[in-house]
Length: 450
Image (cartoon, rainbow, N blue to C red):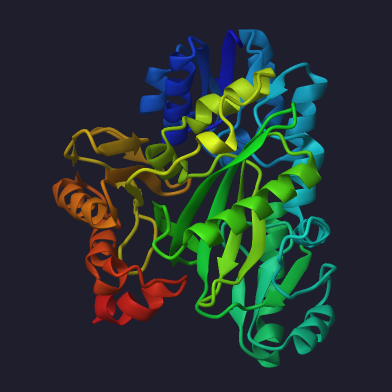
């Protein structure tokens, strides 16, 4: 097994990977920015090295510096977590060139799945259903208008190389598309270095359901059930759960087998997630593939008992998967909420000094935290502070436990989205499992402004 792993990330996910390293008796190396010098993950790692200034291009996106530190520390592998360099083909390739194992899939697979039009074509070849849309990228507004006319409005305009809701917008007619195209294209160019856009049919009242996969280099692959990720704000998830209250055994099996076909087609290795839109008739359509660890992986771990991060590390080392599909069982129900430093009504970030932090603990409560009671929340990074995961015997039990845990969760000194999370899980529609990607706009927007 690896002796030492460098973690090219920050916050709660860095702490999560450090725990996995400790479990496998592997030394961990944290890298941090000037803004994160006092962060918990820096103190938790066996070794810690300063990367650079607070801005991401000075630190967590500085691939050359990360490689330099890894070599100086004698780290045999790099775990990228999620975000930052986790889905960077050039970084994965650089690791290989420098003789360092990148804990993730190959650079070529990352790049193929990172471009939505390429990903669509591969999925079609693998027999995976896709949303009607462009086969090629739209480089001009004229291309987009032509595609939308063929597909039929409403459509989704997306950054071809993007993710995280950046450069994404619903468009209802040609006038809206003309107005939206330039601004979203500029955002895509700024965030991803690629201004190509993509147009696909909007699946109305869709659920966002994803399938977690693990695959090794020996040809073994498994799917670990599904996660319901329909509760979103600004196209970013805020509540996730496993299993989905909507998915039955047949749909789970069909989606899982589709995911495995995609994995086999790609020659995929390590952990990955296939995201789907599912309509009210249980028709499912490939949305994108995340070639990395997901923020919401804990709910799958809780209901399957499988440690996804340690499996990632073992796979990267060359070991076979420790499980086969027949070994995967789902027991109980788990719900995760993302706690953000943001205004719960406007969703604007709320950086600042935390003056108090307290929360309840228990056997069915799991905390993944990037903060402590003295943390200064920086304006330079994503405002997610922590994840709260509660698992119960069934969905009702998990919701009730989560409600109790949220009532006890106190963060003072900054604004957080905890009031919004409470409104979501206490809403009758959520309790009934009646949700789609428009849940917040449909059920809570007027209520919270009113």
